Image 1 (cartoon, rainbow over the protein chains, first blue to last red):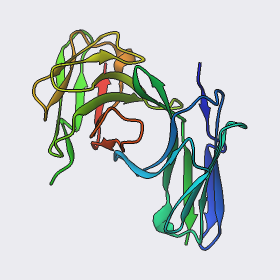
Image 2 (image 1 turned 60 degrees about the vertical axis):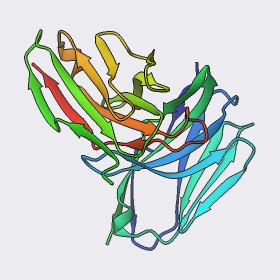
Image 3 (image 1 turned 135 degrees about the horizontal axis):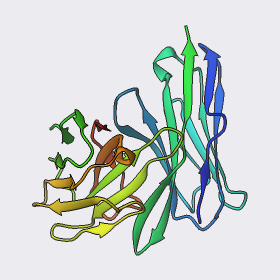
Image 4 (image 1 turned 90 degrees about the vertical axis):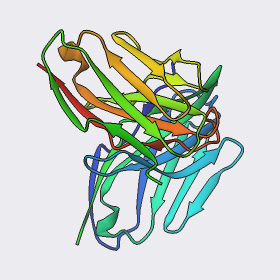
Length: 113
Length: 114
């Protein structure tokens, strides 16, 4: 059974710091992987989707990498800002009849001004 | 363009009561989903609808029923609410069956069952 783990559960950093969020999964047979952002009391917003044939995707200050063989993905945030404070969730997408998302429990990030 | 909307935003029920959570999307998406989010656990899929007129069980379907009323609307019904169903419920939609299609999420419904 596919399991997705995100460590640490919470992280506080000073503004301007570069940081890395980690996501690990137990079964390398994934279709794609997606990173989401969740603000308190809100729904999820998609940040980056990495197809299984890709090794990384970039959007602005965000860079996500994928290493299927080791069961790991990282989300790199450059020059962090207080507005980046949120919970970051990764989800592996598996093909099982239809495509199913298996979510991690998230990393709660706080960027201090 | 409102995206995905959910009603109500908050609800308190007593054990045994029933209710329906409503979801609508205005993006002409084919697929719609219902998830629940519990502390310390990732989002878990309750039911999904790959297209109008079809519904399928997800990971945790027990105690729930769904209706894909039309292409826009996908409702989730709790027939006899239990405290274990206290959770935050999210509706989502995607253009295709998922995979390479981004899922768009609603703001959630916070449900408490006493």
